[in-house]
Image (tube, rainbow, N blue to C red):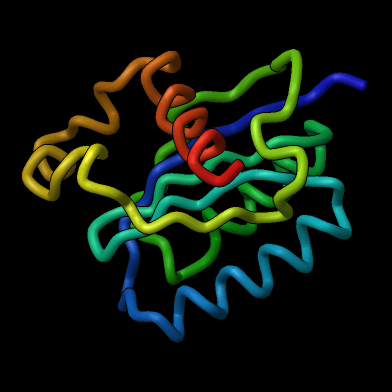
Length: 132
């Protein structure tokens, strides 16, 4: 089975713990139903998410995210086929953006959009190693 991977970034609208819990609960339910795994790195200034699974399911999930008013300025950063899942056991791993990730000034200056596919995938590989 071919795995399709998509990484996007967005700006949270009205970020708080209740909102994040709601997003994670719905995401985990839908992702489990649709065969999607992945991770959401979240902070008050950024959502950075990796989705992986069947291409049609991942693209449908991304379309729902684009239409979700809890996300502003949604940007597809990477998409395409990959050899294996990074988060095979996680319907949606959540991770508060650690200090090793770009700081708020760097995010505001466009560091995430300027990052290449390898750098973005390495961010999620690190999250996967830390959660193992």
